[in-house]
Length: 309
Length: 268
Image (tube, rainbow over all chains, first blue to last red; front, side):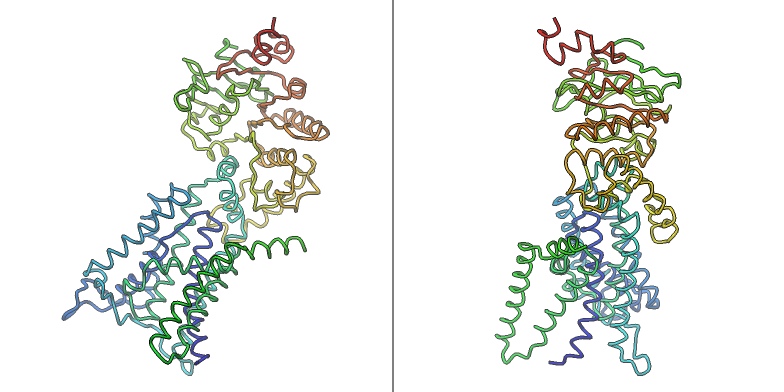
Protein backbone atom coordinates (compact mmCIF):
# COMPACT_ATOMS: atom_id res chain seq x y z
CA UNK A 1 0.00 0.00 0.00
CA UNK A 2 1.31 3.43 -0.99
CA UNK A 3 0.72 5.26 2.29
CA UNK A 4 1.96 8.75 1.29
CA UNK A 5 -0.30 8.72 -1.78
CA UNK A 6 -3.19 7.38 0.28
CA UNK A 7 -2.76 10.04 2.95
CA UNK A 8 -2.60 12.84 0.43
CA UNK A 9 -5.80 11.55 -1.20
CA UNK A 10 -7.47 11.36 2.21
CA UNK A 11 -6.31 14.92 2.98
CA UNK A 12 -7.77 16.22 -0.29
CA UNK A 13 -11.05 14.29 -0.43
CA UNK A 14 -11.43 14.46 3.37
CA UNK A 15 -11.09 18.26 3.24
CA UNK A 16 -13.63 18.55 0.42
CA UNK A 17 -16.17 16.35 2.19
CA UNK A 18 -15.23 17.97 5.50
CA UNK A 19 -16.50 21.29 4.09
CA UNK A 20 -19.80 19.68 3.07
CA UNK A 21 -20.11 18.00 6.49
CA UNK A 22 -19.47 21.34 8.23
CA UNK A 23 -22.24 22.91 6.18
CA UNK A 24 -24.57 20.09 7.14
CA UNK A 25 -23.51 20.52 10.77
CA UNK A 26 -24.49 24.18 10.59
CA UNK A 27 -27.82 23.44 8.91
CA UNK A 28 -28.83 20.48 11.06
CA UNK A 29 -27.09 20.61 14.43
CA UNK A 30 -27.45 24.36 14.83
CA UNK A 31 -30.21 25.37 12.43
CA UNK A 32 -32.41 22.33 13.04
CA UNK A 33 -32.92 21.76 9.31
CA UNK A 34 -32.70 18.28 7.80
CA UNK A 35 -31.28 18.61 4.30
CA UNK A 36 -31.29 15.30 2.44
CA UNK A 37 -30.40 16.96 -0.82
CA UNK A 38 -27.03 18.50 -0.03
CA UNK A 39 -25.44 16.70 -2.97
CA UNK A 40 -27.37 18.99 -5.32
CA UNK A 41 -25.57 22.11 -4.02
CA UNK A 42 -22.27 20.24 -4.32
CA UNK A 43 -23.14 19.31 -7.92
CA UNK A 44 -24.19 22.87 -8.75
CA UNK A 45 -20.73 24.04 -7.65
CA UNK A 46 -18.95 21.37 -9.70
CA UNK A 47 -20.97 21.92 -12.87
CA UNK A 48 -20.79 25.70 -12.60
CA UNK A 49 -17.02 25.54 -12.30
CA UNK A 50 -16.80 23.15 -15.27
CA UNK A 51 -19.09 25.22 -17.49
CA UNK A 52 -17.40 28.52 -16.65
CA UNK A 53 -13.88 27.26 -17.24
CA UNK A 54 -14.37 24.85 -20.16
CA UNK A 55 -13.75 25.97 -23.74
CA UNK A 56 -16.71 26.61 -26.07
CA UNK A 57 -18.15 23.45 -27.68
CA UNK A 58 -16.64 22.15 -30.87
CA UNK A 59 -16.82 19.02 -33.01
CA UNK A 60 -18.94 16.32 -31.38
CA UNK A 61 -19.44 18.14 -28.08
CA UNK A 62 -23.10 18.15 -27.11
CA UNK A 63 -22.93 20.83 -24.43
CA UNK A 64 -23.95 24.32 -25.51
CA UNK A 65 -21.99 26.53 -23.12
CA UNK A 66 -18.33 26.92 -22.35
CA UNK A 67 -17.04 30.31 -21.28
CA UNK A 68 -13.34 29.53 -21.01
CA UNK A 69 -13.00 31.94 -18.09
CA UNK A 70 -10.13 31.67 -15.59
CA UNK A 71 -10.32 29.20 -12.71
CA UNK A 72 -10.89 31.80 -10.01
CA UNK A 73 -13.97 33.11 -11.82
CA UNK A 74 -15.33 29.57 -12.04
CA UNK A 75 -14.52 28.98 -8.39
CA UNK A 76 -16.26 32.15 -7.16
CA UNK A 77 -19.26 31.62 -9.43
CA UNK A 78 -19.56 28.05 -8.11
CA UNK A 79 -20.18 29.49 -4.64
CA UNK A 80 -22.60 32.09 -5.99
CA UNK A 81 -24.48 29.49 -8.05
CA UNK A 82 -24.87 27.24 -4.99
CA UNK A 83 -26.17 30.27 -3.08
CA UNK A 84 -28.66 30.98 -5.87
CA UNK A 85 -29.75 27.34 -5.96
CA UNK A 86 -30.22 27.39 -2.18
CA UNK A 87 -32.35 30.54 -2.51
CA UNK A 88 -34.43 28.85 -5.21
CA UNK A 89 -34.93 25.61 -3.28
CA UNK A 90 -35.10 27.19 0.16
CA UNK A 91 -37.91 29.57 -0.67
CA UNK A 92 -40.61 26.87 -1.02
CA UNK A 93 -39.12 24.30 1.37
CA UNK A 94 -38.01 26.15 4.48
CA UNK A 95 -41.55 26.60 5.74
CA UNK A 96 -41.50 22.86 6.30
CA UNK A 97 -40.05 21.11 9.32
CA UNK A 98 -38.42 17.80 10.17
CA UNK A 99 -39.10 14.90 7.86
CA UNK A 100 -41.13 17.05 5.45
CA UNK A 101 -38.13 19.27 4.83
CA UNK A 102 -35.94 16.15 4.50
CA UNK A 103 -38.28 14.71 1.86
CA UNK A 104 -38.58 17.89 -0.18
CA UNK A 105 -34.83 18.58 -0.21
CA UNK A 106 -34.27 14.95 -1.23
CA UNK A 107 -36.83 15.35 -4.00
CA UNK A 108 -35.17 18.56 -5.22
CA UNK A 109 -31.80 16.79 -5.39
CA UNK A 110 -33.29 13.85 -7.28
CA UNK A 111 -35.00 16.18 -9.77
CA UNK A 112 -31.72 18.03 -10.26
CA UNK A 113 -29.86 14.73 -10.74
CA UNK A 114 -32.45 13.67 -13.30
CA UNK A 115 -32.03 17.05 -15.02
CA UNK A 116 -28.26 16.51 -15.23
CA UNK A 117 -28.78 13.03 -16.66
CA UNK A 118 -31.17 14.18 -19.35
CA UNK A 119 -30.14 17.71 -20.29
CA UNK A 120 -27.25 17.42 -22.74
CA UNK A 121 -26.87 21.12 -23.56
CA UNK A 122 -25.97 22.09 -20.01
CA UNK A 123 -23.89 19.24 -18.61
CA UNK A 124 -23.53 16.84 -21.53
CA UNK A 125 -26.09 14.38 -20.12
CA UNK A 126 -25.00 11.06 -18.65
CA UNK A 127 -21.48 11.47 -20.04
CA UNK A 128 -20.99 14.69 -18.13
CA UNK A 129 -18.17 17.14 -18.56
CA UNK A 130 -14.65 15.78 -18.62
CA UNK A 131 -11.19 17.32 -18.77
CA UNK A 132 -12.34 19.96 -16.30
CA UNK A 133 -9.70 22.64 -15.92
CA UNK A 134 -7.11 21.94 -13.19
CA UNK A 135 -5.67 25.28 -12.19
CA UNK A 136 -2.77 24.15 -10.05
CA UNK A 137 0.29 22.64 -11.62
CA UNK A 138 3.45 21.86 -9.75
CA UNK A 139 4.55 24.83 -7.62
CA UNK A 140 8.31 24.70 -7.99
CA UNK A 141 9.41 21.63 -6.14
CA UNK A 142 5.92 21.03 -4.73
CA UNK A 143 3.97 18.48 -6.72
CA UNK A 144 0.47 19.27 -7.95
CA UNK A 145 -1.17 16.71 -5.65
CA UNK A 146 0.25 18.48 -2.57
CA UNK A 147 -0.87 21.85 -3.90
CA UNK A 148 -4.36 20.40 -4.33
CA UNK A 149 -4.40 18.94 -0.85
CA UNK A 150 -3.27 22.34 0.48
CA UNK A 151 -5.97 24.19 -1.46
CA UNK A 152 -8.70 21.83 -0.23
CA UNK A 153 -7.38 22.07 3.33
CA UNK A 154 -7.35 25.88 3.04
CA UNK A 155 -11.00 25.89 1.97
CA UNK A 156 -11.80 23.66 4.95
CA UNK A 157 -9.88 25.89 7.39
CA UNK A 158 -11.52 29.09 6.11
CA UNK A 159 -14.97 27.46 6.29
CA UNK A 160 -14.25 26.16 9.77
CA UNK A 161 -12.99 29.55 10.98
CA UNK A 162 -16.01 31.38 9.55
CA UNK A 163 -18.52 28.89 10.98
CA UNK A 164 -16.80 28.84 14.37
CA UNK A 165 -16.85 32.62 14.54
CA UNK A 166 -20.51 32.65 13.57
CA UNK A 167 -21.54 29.95 16.03
CA UNK A 168 -19.57 31.42 18.93
CA UNK A 169 -21.30 34.76 18.45
CA UNK A 170 -24.75 35.82 19.70
CA UNK A 171 -25.96 34.75 16.25
CA UNK A 172 -25.05 31.14 17.08
CA UNK A 173 -26.69 31.42 20.48
CA UNK A 174 -29.89 32.73 18.88
CA UNK A 175 -29.77 29.83 16.41
CA UNK A 176 -29.48 27.36 19.28
CA UNK A 177 -32.46 29.00 20.95
CA UNK A 178 -34.54 28.76 17.76
CA UNK A 179 -33.62 25.10 17.35
CA UNK A 180 -34.46 24.32 21.00
CA UNK A 181 -37.80 26.14 21.11
CA UNK A 182 -38.87 28.27 18.19
CA UNK A 183 -41.97 29.76 19.85
CA UNK A 184 -40.02 30.88 22.92
CA UNK A 185 -37.23 32.26 20.72
CA UNK A 186 -39.70 34.27 18.65
CA UNK A 187 -41.21 35.61 21.85
CA UNK A 188 -37.72 36.85 22.70
CA UNK A 189 -37.55 38.74 19.41
CA UNK A 190 -35.64 36.18 17.34
CA UNK A 191 -36.70 36.24 13.67
CA UNK A 192 -36.57 32.47 13.29
CA UNK A 193 -37.68 32.21 9.66
CA UNK A 194 -35.16 34.83 8.52
CA UNK A 195 -32.31 33.25 10.46
CA UNK A 196 -33.11 29.77 9.14
CA UNK A 197 -33.10 31.08 5.61
CA UNK A 198 -29.77 32.84 6.19
CA UNK A 199 -28.19 29.66 7.54
CA UNK A 200 -29.50 27.65 4.61
CA UNK A 201 -28.08 30.15 2.14
CA UNK A 202 -24.68 30.81 3.69
CA UNK A 203 -23.98 27.14 4.29
CA UNK A 204 -24.60 26.42 0.60
CA UNK A 205 -21.72 28.70 -0.46
CA UNK A 206 -18.83 26.54 0.86
CA UNK A 207 -20.62 23.43 -0.45
CA UNK A 208 -20.61 24.98 -3.92
CA UNK A 209 -16.94 25.92 -3.56
CA UNK A 210 -16.15 22.38 -2.40
CA UNK A 211 -17.98 21.10 -5.48
CA UNK A 212 -15.71 23.25 -7.65
CA UNK A 213 -12.58 21.87 -5.96
CA UNK A 214 -13.96 18.34 -6.38
CA UNK A 215 -14.44 18.96 -10.12
CA UNK A 216 -10.88 20.33 -10.36
CA UNK A 217 -9.50 17.32 -8.48
CA UNK A 218 -11.37 14.65 -10.42
CA UNK A 219 -11.42 16.73 -13.66
CA UNK A 220 -14.98 15.49 -14.00
CA UNK A 221 -18.51 16.78 -13.55
CA UNK A 222 -20.69 13.75 -14.16
CA UNK A 223 -24.15 12.82 -12.81
CA UNK A 224 -22.74 9.52 -11.50
CA UNK A 225 -20.53 11.47 -9.08
CA UNK A 226 -23.47 13.35 -7.58
CA UNK A 227 -25.98 10.71 -6.56
CA UNK A 228 -27.95 10.50 -3.30
CA UNK A 229 -25.13 8.30 -1.98
CA UNK A 230 -22.99 11.43 -1.53
CA UNK A 231 -25.70 12.95 0.68
CA UNK A 232 -25.84 9.84 2.84
CA UNK A 233 -22.05 9.54 3.10
CA UNK A 234 -21.94 13.12 4.41
CA UNK A 235 -24.77 12.41 6.85
CA UNK A 236 -22.99 9.30 8.09
CA UNK A 237 -19.78 11.31 8.52
CA UNK A 238 -21.72 13.88 10.55
CA UNK A 239 -23.28 11.25 12.80
CA UNK A 240 -20.05 9.26 13.20
CA UNK A 241 -18.06 12.34 14.15
CA UNK A 242 -20.68 13.73 16.47
CA UNK A 243 -23.04 16.39 15.23
CA UNK A 244 -22.63 18.64 18.24
CA UNK A 245 -19.26 20.12 17.34
CA UNK A 246 -17.62 21.36 14.17
CA UNK A 247 -14.51 19.33 15.00
CA UNK A 248 -16.58 16.16 15.34
CA UNK A 249 -18.12 16.80 11.93
CA UNK A 250 -14.67 17.20 10.39
CA UNK A 251 -13.32 14.17 12.17
CA UNK A 252 -16.22 12.08 10.91
CA UNK A 253 -15.56 13.17 7.32
CA UNK A 254 -11.83 12.39 7.50
CA UNK A 255 -12.42 9.09 9.30
CA UNK A 256 -14.95 7.89 6.75
CA UNK A 257 -12.85 8.97 3.75
CA UNK A 258 -9.77 7.34 5.32
CA UNK A 259 -11.65 4.09 5.83
CA UNK A 260 -12.96 4.10 2.25
CA UNK A 261 -9.58 4.92 0.75
CA UNK A 262 -7.81 2.22 2.77
CA UNK A 263 -10.28 -0.41 1.55
CA UNK A 264 -9.84 0.85 -2.01
CA UNK A 265 -6.04 0.73 -1.73
CA UNK A 266 -5.91 -2.84 -0.43
CA UNK A 267 -4.22 -5.13 -2.96
CA UNK A 268 -6.63 -7.87 -4.04
CA UNK A 269 -5.72 -11.04 -5.87
CA UNK A 270 -9.04 -11.39 -7.63
CA UNK A 271 -11.93 -9.19 -8.74
CA UNK A 272 -14.22 -11.26 -6.51
CA UNK A 273 -12.24 -10.43 -3.38
CA UNK A 274 -12.32 -6.73 -4.30
CA UNK A 275 -16.10 -6.92 -4.66
CA UNK A 276 -16.39 -8.62 -1.27
CA UNK A 277 -14.17 -5.96 0.30
CA UNK A 278 -16.37 -3.21 -1.14
CA UNK A 279 -19.45 -4.87 0.35
CA UNK A 280 -17.73 -5.36 3.70
CA UNK A 281 -16.82 -1.67 3.67
CA UNK A 282 -20.48 -0.74 3.34
CA UNK A 283 -21.50 -3.22 6.03
CA UNK A 284 -18.91 -1.91 8.50
CA UNK A 285 -19.93 1.69 7.80
CA UNK A 286 -23.57 0.74 8.39
CA UNK A 287 -22.79 -1.10 11.63
CA UNK A 288 -20.73 1.86 12.88
CA UNK A 289 -23.60 4.18 12.01
CA UNK A 290 -26.10 2.05 13.95
CA UNK A 291 -23.68 1.70 16.90
CA UNK A 292 -23.20 5.47 17.12
CA UNK A 293 -26.95 6.06 16.99
CA UNK A 294 -27.57 3.33 19.58
CA UNK A 295 -24.86 4.18 22.11
CA UNK A 296 -24.43 7.92 21.39
CA UNK A 297 -20.81 7.99 22.54
CA UNK A 298 -20.41 11.70 21.79
CA UNK A 299 -23.24 12.70 24.08
CA UNK A 300 -21.63 10.59 26.82
CA UNK A 301 -18.26 12.24 26.25
CA UNK A 302 -19.90 15.66 26.38
CA UNK A 303 -21.66 14.81 29.63
CA UNK A 304 -18.38 13.61 31.14
CA UNK A 305 -16.56 16.75 30.03
CA UNK A 306 -19.36 18.87 31.46
CA UNK A 307 -19.32 16.95 34.74
CA UNK A 308 -15.54 17.28 35.06
CA UNK A 309 -15.72 21.03 34.54
CA UNK B 1 -64.62 51.68 31.40
CA UNK B 2 -67.03 50.99 28.64
CA UNK B 3 -69.07 48.00 29.69
CA UNK B 4 -68.52 44.34 30.31
CA UNK B 5 -67.31 43.47 26.83
CA UNK B 6 -65.32 46.62 26.38
CA UNK B 7 -63.41 47.29 29.57
CA UNK B 8 -60.73 49.90 30.08
CA UNK B 9 -58.04 49.47 32.66
CA UNK B 10 -57.39 53.02 33.74
CA UNK B 11 -54.24 54.93 34.61
CA UNK B 12 -53.27 58.53 34.07
CA UNK B 13 -50.91 57.67 31.22
CA UNK B 14 -53.20 56.73 28.33
CA UNK B 15 -53.87 53.57 26.38
CA UNK B 16 -51.04 51.13 25.69
CA UNK B 17 -52.97 48.15 24.33
CA UNK B 18 -56.33 48.10 22.58
CA UNK B 19 -58.02 44.81 21.85
CA UNK B 20 -61.01 45.34 19.55
CA UNK B 21 -63.47 42.56 18.80
CA UNK B 22 -60.87 39.80 18.87
CA UNK B 23 -62.04 36.20 18.57
CA UNK B 24 -60.58 32.75 18.11
CA UNK B 25 -62.12 29.38 17.28
CA UNK B 26 -60.49 25.97 17.58
CA UNK B 27 -62.04 23.23 15.42
CA UNK B 28 -65.19 25.31 15.09
CA UNK B 29 -65.57 25.85 18.83
CA UNK B 30 -65.41 29.42 20.08
CA UNK B 31 -62.38 29.66 22.40
CA UNK B 32 -62.27 33.42 22.79
CA UNK B 33 -64.68 36.29 22.16
CA UNK B 34 -68.46 36.14 21.89
CA UNK B 35 -70.49 37.23 18.89
CA UNK B 36 -68.84 40.66 18.91
CA UNK B 37 -65.44 39.41 19.93
CA UNK B 38 -63.48 40.43 23.00
CA UNK B 39 -62.64 44.09 23.51
CA UNK B 40 -60.72 45.86 26.23
CA UNK B 41 -57.97 48.40 26.71
CA UNK B 42 -54.99 48.43 29.00
CA UNK B 43 -53.41 51.71 29.94
CA UNK B 44 -49.71 52.33 30.16
CA UNK B 45 -48.24 51.62 33.56
CA UNK B 46 -51.15 49.55 34.86
CA UNK B 47 -50.86 46.25 36.76
CA UNK B 48 -53.62 43.94 35.58
CA UNK B 49 -54.59 40.53 36.87
CA UNK B 50 -56.31 38.23 34.39
CA UNK B 51 -58.28 35.46 36.06
CA UNK B 52 -60.83 32.87 35.11
CA UNK B 53 -61.50 29.16 35.42
CA UNK B 54 -59.60 26.60 33.34
CA UNK B 55 -60.48 26.90 29.67
CA UNK B 56 -61.64 30.51 30.03
CA UNK B 57 -59.28 31.59 27.24
CA UNK B 58 -56.57 33.34 29.28
CA UNK B 59 -53.60 31.63 27.62
CA UNK B 60 -55.31 31.83 24.22
CA UNK B 61 -55.62 35.58 24.74
CA UNK B 62 -51.88 35.76 25.53
CA UNK B 63 -51.16 33.75 22.39
CA UNK B 64 -53.22 36.16 20.29
CA UNK B 65 -51.61 39.21 21.87
CA UNK B 66 -48.11 37.88 21.22
CA UNK B 67 -48.77 36.55 17.73
CA UNK B 68 -48.24 32.90 18.61
CA UNK B 69 -51.74 32.36 17.20
CA UNK B 70 -53.48 34.51 14.59
CA UNK B 71 -56.81 36.05 15.58
CA UNK B 72 -59.83 35.01 13.50
CA UNK B 73 -61.30 38.50 13.76
CA UNK B 74 -60.67 41.86 15.40
CA UNK B 75 -57.65 44.10 15.76
CA UNK B 76 -54.89 44.55 18.30
CA UNK B 77 -53.35 47.99 18.64
CA UNK B 78 -50.19 48.47 20.67
CA UNK B 79 -48.79 51.94 21.33
CA UNK B 80 -50.97 53.28 18.53
CA UNK B 81 -49.76 50.74 15.95
CA UNK B 82 -52.00 48.01 14.55
CA UNK B 83 -50.01 44.86 15.24
CA UNK B 84 -52.74 42.37 14.30
CA UNK B 85 -50.75 41.10 11.33
CA UNK B 86 -47.32 41.39 13.00
CA UNK B 87 -45.33 38.22 13.62
CA UNK B 88 -44.44 37.01 17.07
CA UNK B 89 -40.86 38.29 16.95
CA UNK B 90 -42.00 41.66 15.61
CA UNK B 91 -44.38 42.05 18.56
CA UNK B 92 -41.51 41.21 20.91
CA UNK B 93 -39.45 43.90 19.20
CA UNK B 94 -42.36 46.32 19.61
CA UNK B 95 -42.06 45.72 23.37
CA UNK B 96 -44.44 42.89 24.26
CA UNK B 97 -42.81 40.25 26.44
CA UNK B 98 -44.34 37.07 27.79
CA UNK B 99 -43.82 33.91 29.77
CA UNK B 100 -45.63 30.65 29.12
CA UNK B 101 -48.04 28.51 31.12
CA UNK B 102 -45.66 25.59 30.67
CA UNK B 103 -42.11 26.93 31.06
CA UNK B 104 -40.27 27.00 27.74
CA UNK B 105 -36.49 26.99 27.88
CA UNK B 106 -33.51 26.53 25.58
CA UNK B 107 -32.12 23.20 26.71
CA UNK B 108 -28.74 23.45 25.03
CA UNK B 109 -27.94 26.76 26.74
CA UNK B 110 -26.85 27.39 30.31
CA UNK B 111 -29.08 29.21 32.76
CA UNK B 112 -27.10 32.41 32.16
CA UNK B 113 -27.35 32.12 28.36
CA UNK B 114 -31.08 31.44 28.67
CA UNK B 115 -31.34 34.95 30.08
CA UNK B 116 -28.77 36.65 27.83
CA UNK B 117 -30.48 35.27 24.71
CA UNK B 118 -33.59 37.19 25.72
CA UNK B 119 -31.84 40.44 24.85
CA UNK B 120 -31.31 41.59 21.30
CA UNK B 121 -27.56 41.73 20.76
CA UNK B 122 -25.90 43.48 17.81
CA UNK B 123 -24.05 40.19 17.26
CA UNK B 124 -27.32 38.53 16.24
CA UNK B 125 -27.10 40.22 12.87
CA UNK B 126 -25.23 38.06 10.39
CA UNK B 127 -22.80 40.73 9.28
CA UNK B 128 -21.95 41.81 12.83
CA UNK B 129 -21.56 38.22 14.02
CA UNK B 130 -18.52 37.77 11.80
CA UNK B 131 -16.90 40.89 13.26
CA UNK B 132 -15.80 41.64 16.79
CA UNK B 133 -17.74 44.75 17.78
CA UNK B 134 -20.49 42.77 19.49
CA UNK B 135 -18.04 41.58 22.16
CA UNK B 136 -18.09 44.93 23.95
CA UNK B 137 -21.86 44.88 24.12
CA UNK B 138 -21.85 41.24 25.22
CA UNK B 139 -20.00 41.93 28.48
CA UNK B 140 -22.70 44.40 29.49
CA UNK B 141 -25.45 41.91 28.66
CA UNK B 142 -23.83 39.18 30.74
CA UNK B 143 -23.51 41.53 33.69
CA UNK B 144 -27.15 42.56 33.29
CA UNK B 145 -28.22 38.89 33.09
CA UNK B 146 -26.32 38.08 36.31
CA UNK B 147 -28.09 40.94 38.10
CA UNK B 148 -31.46 39.67 36.91
CA UNK B 149 -30.63 36.09 37.94
CA UNK B 150 -29.78 37.48 41.36
CA UNK B 151 -33.16 39.20 41.53
CA UNK B 152 -35.01 35.95 40.75
CA UNK B 153 -32.87 33.85 43.10
CA UNK B 154 -30.92 31.93 40.48
CA UNK B 155 -27.55 33.67 40.71
CA UNK B 156 -25.72 30.58 41.91
CA UNK B 157 -27.19 28.43 39.14
CA UNK B 158 -25.91 30.64 36.29
CA UNK B 159 -23.47 28.17 34.76
CA UNK B 160 -25.69 25.10 35.11
CA UNK B 161 -27.67 23.52 32.27
CA UNK B 162 -31.35 24.41 32.48
CA UNK B 163 -32.24 20.73 32.77
CA UNK B 164 -30.99 20.87 36.38
CA UNK B 165 -33.60 23.47 37.42
CA UNK B 166 -36.88 22.61 39.14
CA UNK B 167 -40.24 23.53 37.64
CA UNK B 168 -40.53 26.61 39.83
CA UNK B 169 -37.01 27.73 38.98
CA UNK B 170 -37.78 27.34 35.28
CA UNK B 171 -40.70 29.73 35.71
CA UNK B 172 -38.42 32.26 37.35
CA UNK B 173 -35.96 31.78 34.51
CA UNK B 174 -38.74 32.57 32.01
CA UNK B 175 -39.43 35.81 33.86
CA UNK B 176 -35.71 36.61 33.95
CA UNK B 177 -35.40 36.14 30.17
CA UNK B 178 -38.12 38.71 29.61
CA UNK B 179 -36.73 41.19 32.12
CA UNK B 180 -33.49 41.57 30.17
CA UNK B 181 -35.59 42.77 27.24
CA UNK B 182 -37.21 45.49 29.39
CA UNK B 183 -40.55 45.08 27.59
CA UNK B 184 -43.13 47.87 27.70
CA UNK B 185 -45.86 45.28 28.33
CA UNK B 186 -45.07 42.06 30.18
CA UNK B 187 -47.55 39.19 30.08
CA UNK B 188 -46.94 36.54 32.74
CA UNK B 189 -48.78 33.23 32.50
CA UNK B 190 -49.14 31.61 35.94
CA UNK B 191 -45.76 32.80 37.22
CA UNK B 192 -46.19 31.28 40.71
CA UNK B 193 -47.25 27.74 39.71
CA UNK B 194 -44.80 25.33 41.35
CA UNK B 195 -42.69 28.17 42.73
CA UNK B 196 -41.47 27.90 46.32
CA UNK B 197 -43.36 30.28 48.67
CA UNK B 198 -40.17 32.19 49.48
CA UNK B 199 -39.54 32.73 45.78
CA UNK B 200 -43.18 33.80 45.37
CA UNK B 201 -42.60 36.61 47.84
CA UNK B 202 -39.48 37.58 45.95
CA UNK B 203 -41.44 37.50 42.67
CA UNK B 204 -44.19 39.69 44.17
CA UNK B 205 -41.58 42.25 45.24
CA UNK B 206 -39.94 42.08 41.83
CA UNK B 207 -43.22 42.67 39.97
CA UNK B 208 -44.15 45.51 42.32
CA UNK B 209 -40.75 47.07 41.62
CA UNK B 210 -41.21 46.75 37.85
CA UNK B 211 -44.64 48.31 38.16
CA UNK B 212 -43.20 51.23 40.11
CA UNK B 213 -40.65 51.70 37.34
CA UNK B 214 -43.51 52.09 34.86
CA UNK B 215 -43.71 48.66 33.26
CA UNK B 216 -47.22 47.54 32.30
CA UNK B 217 -47.98 44.07 33.64
CA UNK B 218 -50.71 41.58 32.86
CA UNK B 219 -50.59 38.48 35.03
CA UNK B 220 -52.63 35.31 34.57
CA UNK B 221 -52.75 33.52 37.90
CA UNK B 222 -54.78 30.88 39.70
CA UNK B 223 -53.18 31.86 43.00
CA UNK B 224 -55.72 34.60 43.77
CA UNK B 225 -54.17 35.30 47.15
CA UNK B 226 -50.95 36.26 45.35
CA UNK B 227 -52.60 38.16 42.52
CA UNK B 228 -55.23 40.13 44.42
CA UNK B 229 -52.51 41.38 46.76
CA UNK B 230 -50.36 42.90 44.03
CA UNK B 231 -52.60 43.72 41.01
CA UNK B 232 -54.45 47.02 40.90
CA UNK B 233 -57.05 45.91 38.41
CA UNK B 234 -58.60 42.54 37.60
CA UNK B 235 -60.14 41.25 34.38
CA UNK B 236 -62.23 38.09 34.72
CA UNK B 237 -62.64 35.85 31.70
CA UNK B 238 -65.00 32.93 31.45
CA UNK B 239 -65.83 30.91 28.36
CA UNK B 240 -63.84 33.37 26.29
CA UNK B 241 -65.86 36.40 27.39
CA UNK B 242 -65.16 39.21 29.79
CA UNK B 243 -67.29 38.43 32.82
CA UNK B 244 -66.20 41.20 35.17
CA UNK B 245 -63.51 43.74 35.77
CA UNK B 246 -62.53 46.17 38.45
CA UNK B 247 -60.24 46.64 41.43
CA UNK B 248 -59.44 43.52 43.50
CA UNK B 249 -61.74 44.57 46.32
CA UNK B 250 -64.66 44.75 43.91
CA UNK B 251 -63.86 41.41 42.24
CA UNK B 252 -63.58 39.52 45.55
CA UNK B 253 -67.22 40.08 46.33
CA UNK B 254 -68.66 39.81 42.83
CA UNK B 255 -71.19 36.93 42.87
CA UNK B 256 -70.75 36.33 39.15
CA UNK B 257 -67.02 35.76 39.66
CA UNK B 258 -67.53 33.48 42.65
CA UNK B 259 -70.10 31.54 40.68
CA UNK B 260 -67.78 31.18 37.66
CA UNK B 261 -65.00 29.83 39.89
CA UNK B 262 -66.91 27.76 42.43
CA UNK B 263 -70.38 27.17 40.97
CA UNK B 264 -73.83 28.65 41.63
CA UNK B 265 -74.15 27.23 45.17
CA UNK B 266 -71.23 29.24 46.49
CA UNK B 267 -72.38 32.42 44.83
CA UNK B 268 -75.78 32.33 46.49
